[in-house]
Image (cartoon, rainbow, N blue to C red; front, side):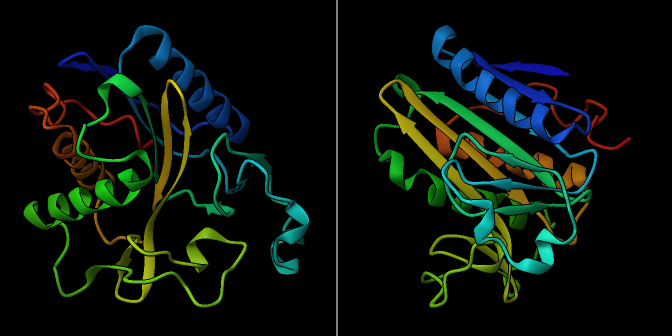
Length: 219
């Protein structure tokens, strides 16, 4: 499903195979630059899998995870490994540089999006402020798994990290890949909050007809 709004493309894909998901994100990042049009893609995984940061060595992963023999793919972005679950919402945001908000440096964009996502979740009643909070500092004990090592600006539910993202910036724009997992809300609630969070970052009107479209995120 593709939804147009103010020159944007918002894509909702059904659960996909691990390598397909990464290839599609990278292809959309090139398409966004070629068409000078931001793209937001929401999707899930058709099986548990591990995505590694662009230059991450799989040998750095915990031995118990390696013994599970899960599919492994490299993301086009950096960051630590993510163990993707069937019940998570994953997204990719590809933005040409000319469309980036002037007041935000690219390196600040991940935290800025999390701030707007939190606001949207609270406004919709999908979360309560006492539980949904920001990590105030980087984890003192870095871990090869992204969700075991919160960094400043990540979203926490209690003490557990529930939202993280990884960034790649180049001269023509940026690609942000993120996952939201472990939040006690429906997929449609989380997807709608994420779209509202992106809208807040870019000062957009609502993505037209998003809330009324049947979700393709659940099979």
